Image 1 (cartoon, rainbow, N blue to C red):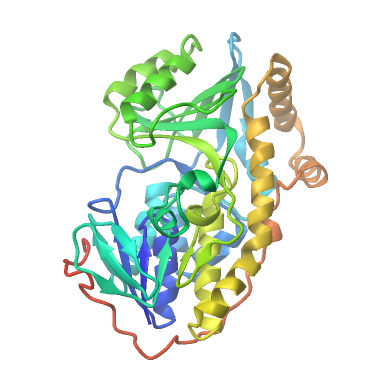
Image 2: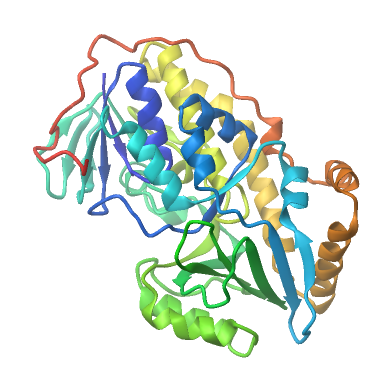
Length: 420
């Protein structure tokens, strides 16, 4: 069975891992010219995703590249004394098994685990998908596939081609996120420093194995901002306007934006599709059900979604007319609960009023002083879904081969295999 996956970040390689083990010939096409090596930003893997990572045989490299960020110093705007917090207290309350890792590190681990079994094609993108599975590309030759799967993120090209314009399905939940690579001039090692103001929050953190650091910015606005998601100059301009006058390390971080080697900016937006399958095309991860970057645990959701999609295809002998609905039914509740949690998190994470800012500071101070056992109990009692990830237990799927064609679709697009 020949399957094309668009996107080589997290969901795409994770899906490729499971599909190749079920005997499918998998091709992964990625717009970027090569696997990203910039480190990206920090993401979380909670218990169900960690269990799947262990089944994939990549637990050791994932643990080896965890960020090691264990301590938070939070400054309230205009105050010189920080509130201190051991981050382990919060994360162990949220999940019994958790790792924070840089996004591109996880992507590289998944790519390394699959590059000899799947055919990776970098520097190309899908331009059309017909009902019978014929696919055309910007650079490669047309090819026919049994299934096409969009794993290409919030601004999915596959979703646009098959389901229509992005604005039909996106729901902005009031905030924006930016991340930039900056020199680690504070010498951060296992520590994150944040300054929080009304409607805005800026921070900086390092990772144990990174030579530099990451600056992260979260802010709220009353209405959506006018910019294109590929217009970096406009994004930096908006960021500088919003964080003008915040103080502490923020002016230095704003100056570093001019020559940062890596910059990310996007709205905290949910996707709300009633179904993410159409014909022989389906979506996985942020392309289908992004709950909101930075607030909804989207990386764990993507890893779990990839595992379930491949498992349901195997369980139904490759019959997508049965497997796709089963996949959606199996993960649907997780997706819906993730959306609800993300909306609540977006509202509470960035304080909108002076009282909210005070309450956030006091909450961090309280968590830092409570015994760890009481912290976990308080979270379980008043979480509003904080432990939603640990409430999911993906089922086991049989070691089934889908069809008889187990040969990779080598050079399916008439191009060279990805970097080895």
